[in-house]
Length: 78
Image 1 (spheres, helix red, strand yellow):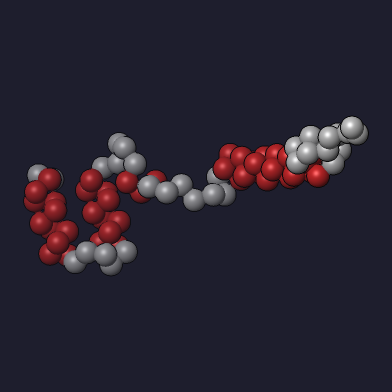
Image 2 (image 1 turned 90 degrees about the vertical axis):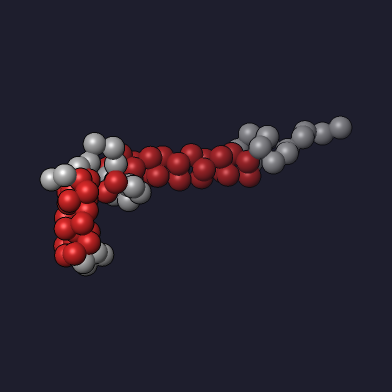
């Protein structure tokens, strides 16, 4: 019948190349993640971050006005 050389079977055929490429890409992504070169979405609003500090950052970035900052500060009781 012959030897079956399917997509992920067959020694060093196409499947092995595809699998190797996926492993290399996955490893590269993991290394980038571990090195901190990938953005950490939600890092600015992570748990334990002071709400007043977030308001200060937003004021500095021009996302809120001084009046809005003062209202936030009063509501937080700071």
